[in-house]
Image (cartoon, rainbow, N blue to C red; front, side, top):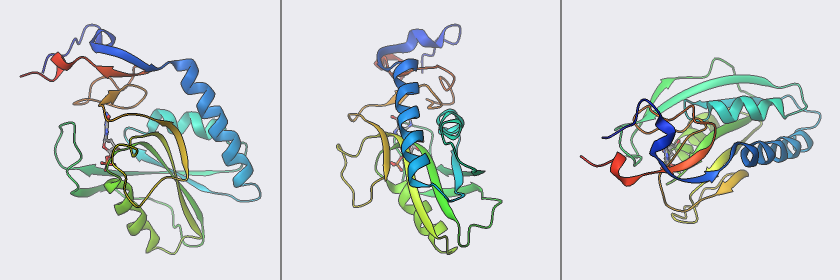
Length: 186
Ligand code: 5GP
């Protein structure tokens, strides 16, 4: 790994979405969610840690009385691929029985993380479960499950920034971009 810890932004080869583009799309999603959940009090769940930046920005754009909670599941391994084996690190504190749950995810790749979470939370008898993801790679890997709300479709490439990491670096870049290949090199 060759990470420029002095100036992590220098490791980004290509900018995908600027701060302004992200803010605009998040505002659109928030407006849609405000309409769709009108008259309800959803439990908006942040899937830690990657969704955290998106989550707080999205909640601010939902002009509703929402409750928030956090869940942390980790996929074994710290590389650039989800292993499909998922471990619960932190469960919800809220009882979601009869509640409308909105899961907020950073990025959907294989869809395995969300499939697992939907199954698990579905056993707790919520009124509904929907998913809002910022980035979706599913055009590259179609699976039977999809998100109800999607920020941007992207290609099959590894992205960082706005909450997304590589080996716990780059999360606080305010934009989303693709890393230079030499960053991964041994
Ligand atoms: P899935 O279970 O859908 O294959 O993978 C979802 C998880 O893998 C995401 O929540 C994220 O943590 C990680 N992931 C997938 N693609 C990327 C990517 O391009 N960049 C980063 N930083 N994480 C990714």
